[in-house]
Length: 299
Image 1 (cartoon, rainbow, N blue to C red):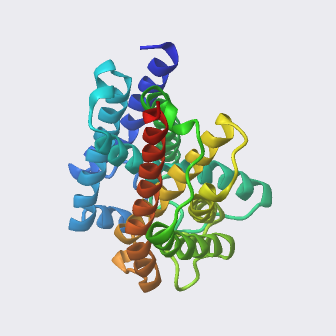
Image 2: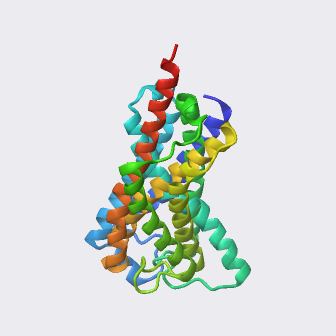
């Protein structure tokens, strides 16, 4: 294992520990990091007990993914498993990695006060610990995934993503464009009464804005001309991040809906975006593999 991979791996492991410790303590009935009675009551509800167990398992899965990405034998695991695990991590963490630091910076510069819904009853130190860990984990997994993909499939990324046509273009437009536009509007103007509730502060809105812009960028990326391998890989990166964010953020907003009250518009867009984004990205990747196979098969 090279030094950059080793550093990224241990960063990923250490980044999950505070979150895991809090989750285990909450499942056990402790109130560590919770600053009011409402938060304590909410955390002990069946919905949040199940949610805490699931998210703790997801953190353990992130550690497992980081380990696999650093092992030589990891290059032999099925590609679909890499896509599912890597796509899940990307779609859930990238809006936090990009949106949270930028949003907090804008909030600090503008002097906008945080809203009461910012932390869900978490103490300030717990909020900072958890979300700093998320950002470090996202950066570490991004680094490991980039090394892995370039080692295993780098030749695929040397050329730009092919343009989607026919059903793929239609499904991509249906899944990515309405979702991306809505998230961009909700991020810029606030979720109002129709968007994801409890995400009204500036830092949270920037995460919505990032999600929306990545979704729109994913649809546009195959139609942009690449001038070389570097720009081609940049387009693949936008395509990957945008499709995974669109596929994962809709369900995440439904599962984390404030007070378990799902907004109809959020649910409708999630139903469109999750299958549409997945089908669009996978169809483009398949076309690129076919084109490359055709070229290499020529005498």
